[in-house]
Length: 460
Image (cartoon, rainbow, N blue to C red; front, side):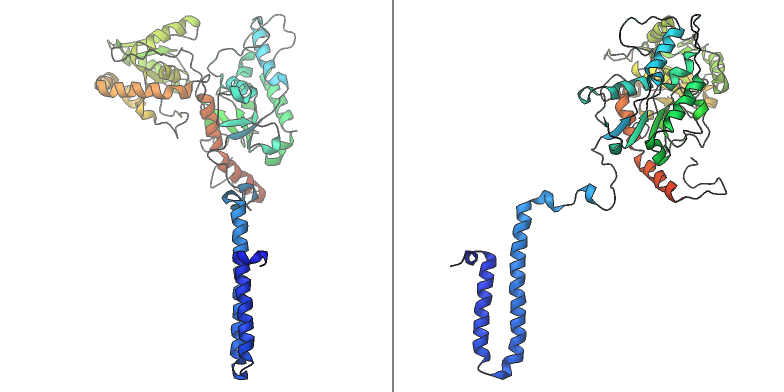
């Protein structure tokens, strides 16, 4: 017996041969049956061949296993979007040091601060997100603060390109004076140098900066370059000083300020805090911050509310820490801009924020419902004598406890030094911008210059 006789395919061929012998014998007995039998013979030949093909094909499919039966996404005709599970791939530019550590060095030198160790330390400010994002990407992957992103060294593998210029610190370097500094620092000049360097990069030229991420957390940072950076994803804390075609919630990411008060980790119930409402900060501000002076006049007469005028200093932070961590509610009025680090000081102090800032934008709001742990009061109502006090006193102990518990749960998302905290949340937000980035890149390839400034998506 042949090898194929025992197989499904071999059995099919032997059966087919037997049918052919029988039919040839039968056909010799009468030519009248010949046409019919020829058609029958053709059918049986085709049927036998299909059996051979079927069994052989099934054997091949079974041998390669289920994983190989599907095309990989990279083999599909259309590049599929980044999956929810895959980390964001970031190419961080290796900028000349004058844009990173050089800025820190000039800041310290302008204030006569000596370096007492080999590693430069970024000064503690509310705008230090730029340091934490840079520092984290400099670490090995096993020491990263974020599992939501990975640094790639090949630009061809990148989803986005990060420009780690310390723009907020650069803005204030010149505020310090040093008598022996023969080379005055100019933030505007350093901005121009950065732009010149960036425009020479092939990755920038390729997509007009659409897939680049730039941080400008201080509301006045990178002011000279905003029109030239409006295609990029901006990491900022406020839209107040940007034009509509420079920044928007659609393409940019709102950052939390770095809190300046130590986090409160006493997990005892905080319902017995003595002060109903606490505020400490500069009473006199410009623009929308003028409401502060009005709030002082209205609330300073309330018996269980503390309203203190103070400026940034070590002693000021100590007093603010004590006040926030012994109060049920913490007032967050608008300042020169709608947001400030005070909100995040309140969150990590487990002091329920009372936000009186009608134009504020908040970080991670697609993930967090701030109404679960904060209270929003329209400015017009807050300025009514007696309104805010009556409203806060009407909040039941159970509701207050719920909000305090929610504050404990969400505060990690505003901690820049904690794994899975603010750094991870920021890169997750950038990842969500990828579909928009791809849309704008593809749009650029087919758009002609338009005679009108009207647009159907966003102006930039």
